[in-house]
Length: 235
Image (cartoon, rainbow, N blue to C red; front, side):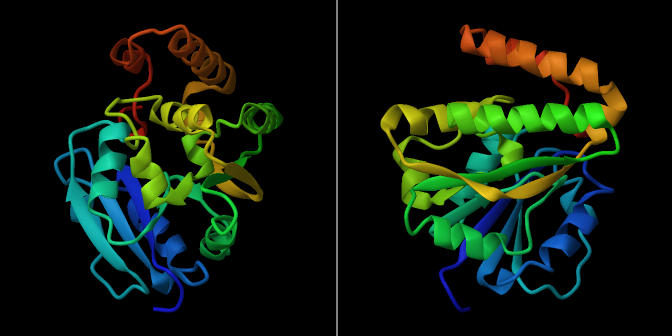
């Protein structure tokens, strides 16, 4: 390997159709041979079982965890061999230069994320994504689908992602903000699928997300909020 290795950690739940195209895309990233991919399955290995067994430019670890993004992401971090973490969602596509961008950013900052972009033909969806991107820059609390990255020591210094089914991304970034940890949001973007908006409708999906954020900010029980937000595999 050349360059410091990076652990790419991905939580999955019933992503049988998405997982192989996702891995195929990662295989096109620049310098990906310096990375390991950790797939953390929250459905008893159902997604892991369909991963195609063929040559890749990186090693793949398959883990099984209890369901819930917070639990799955943290389980992956605990098993990571590298000192730099890049957390991805299976319907996200980071830029091909993502690994180089992460290394360069972490020379100055302790953590970061990419800009948000949703690949959609819908003007409404693209406008909503642009607003969310602006919000994350102002608040310094980027969403998980902006592909968080950080040093392992930074991650563990605040306890990592909390063991919650949703809002784990907001909770971790809020910890960083409260501790004064320097975070950057890159101009390069992670391209995300619009599949949830297409299935649920953009207005319904957006209002639900805003409602959940507001309730969370007001101290609502995350386990109750999770009942209003189903994983992609259950939609």
